[in-house]
Length: 94
Image 1 (cartoon, one colour):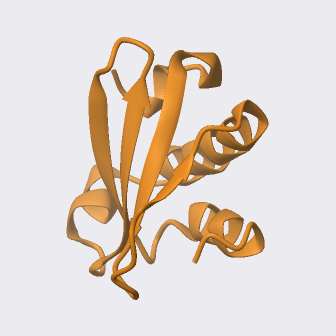
Image 2 (cartoon, rainbow, N blue to C red):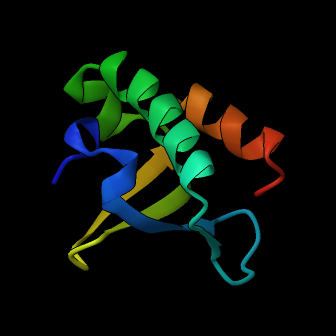
């Protein structure tokens, strides 16, 4: 269930693990915030080729995306994910 094809309504919540501090993961379940998050992450993923996703700098965030059927997909978000990281920074999740 890749994020590019997932609708925000299908997602129950995301858990965000921030590697720069070891506090508990942030859980985001607000539908409007999830929709904005997905939009920003899609911008990043659509802008990459596979090599950039696979070989770029170390992960800044680790995101577990949980859907309404209790399936989980995890993404490492590294410094190439500028839209996603900016969204987290502007929403004070880091």
